Structures are given as structure tokens and as C-alpha cells.
Length: 125
Ligand SMILES: Nc1ncnc2c1ncn2[C@@H]1O[C@H](COP(=O)(O)OP(=O)(O)O)[C@@H](O)[C@H]1O
Ligand SMILES: [Mg+2]
Image (tube, rainbow, N blue to C red):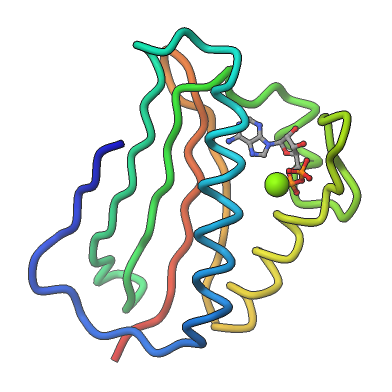
């Protein structure tokens, strides 16, 4: 796991427990996505930087799993959408609801050569 936290970030206000829940969901999803990847190729990267154009901070959770196919990309945030045998499919829809309630955005993109990147913004002072 690698972290990349920018210096001098603005202060963001939010519900600590809810934002921890968002991070936990994204991190667990990333770990689950990498379960079939060779151990040496599993990388989780967490980053935070300021986004002055949006007046806030941006958090990224990136993995080196299989990534997102077009079907997944369009349905990820739907309640009950899951591709896991024991999955509930509620995690990402709850994450998005929490971030939007904080006035931010949550979105996903595929990475090259492999993996997924989930990012969200939170307004800052
Ligand atoms: N990091 C990721 N890499 C690839 N696919 C992902 C990732 N995170 C989520 N997904 C896809 O989105 C679906 C929905 O995720 P989520 O809402 O957290 O529900 P669950 O984890 O219970 O399946 C997952 O089943 C999976 O198909
Ligand atoms: Mg999940």
C-alpha cells in the first residue's frame, strides 16, 4: 500500500464516521478486486490533494485489480449491483449518497494497464 498526501491541504468539514465508512468501502472493494491478482502485482494507492478549481480536496483510492468493464462502469453505483457471489451491492451507492450529502462528487475510472481508480471530492473552507 502506498499513500500520497499533499502538504498544506485545506480543512474539509464532514461527518467523520460517514467518511470513514466511505474509505473503508473503497479500500475493501480494492482489496477484493485484487484477490486473484498475483501477490507482487497488488498495489493499493491512497492519495489526497487539493483541487482549487472545485474549492475542495480530492481523495483517490486506486488498485491494480482487473479494472472496470463497460457494464460495471455504467452500473457500479446502482443499489444491489454486485458481481460478487456474497456481495450486497450497496457499498458504492451508500458511498455516493454520503459524498453527495457532503456537497462532493464520487466517480470511478479505469486505469492503464490495469486497475480501477475511485475518486471523491469534499468541499473545503
Ligand atoms: N475496485 C474495484 N475494481 C473492480 N470492480 C469494482 C471495484 N469496486 C467495485 N467494483 C464493482 O462494483 C460492484 C459494486 O460494488 P459495491 O457497491 O461495493 O458492492 P459489493 O462490494 O457488495 O459487490 C462490485 O461487485 C464490483 O463488480
Ligand atoms: Mg463493496
